[in-house]
Length: 191
Image 1 (cartoon, helix red, strand yellow):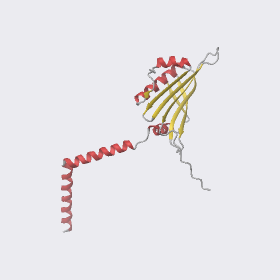
Image 2: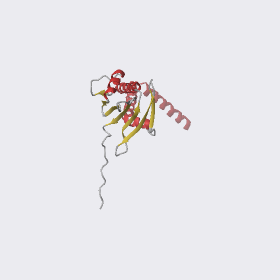
Image 3: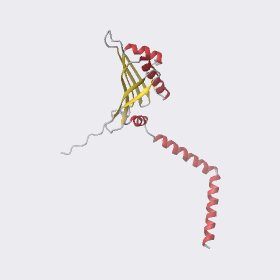
Image 4: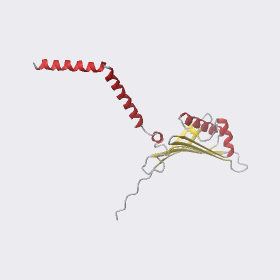
């Protein structure tokens, strides 16, 4: 008798599960639940600055190549008072190959454009234009995407009149304006 009752219960359960999976209403419900889950995963994902900081965490220096030479940069991750990353900066000092610097800077601006950053000026930052700008001793580029920003600052050191080598120093920085300036509330004084 017990086995028969169990078999009947199992049969009823199978029929009810099969019946639910073939109705449109239940299928639509399952699909919409899946979409909500995907949306919540997207909205709870890491901020862009967190991903970038994680990528360069523990790397005080970074080497990157161009068609001409390899460049070496120092990595600085700035954190706010809550110890959350607010910007990641790579600075290169004393590069001597103008073509390598122009190539790298044009590629990084193009990459940021692809990522959705918008220029604050109407200048075209091609490799040729950047090479010309390097002759002016300073170059500043600002790009924005929502709360994020990208800075590029370059300074050329032509040195003394008879110095044969020009040195190029530049920095690139990606930061999150929401994270900048966040300060913890000061603790109350118990005196």
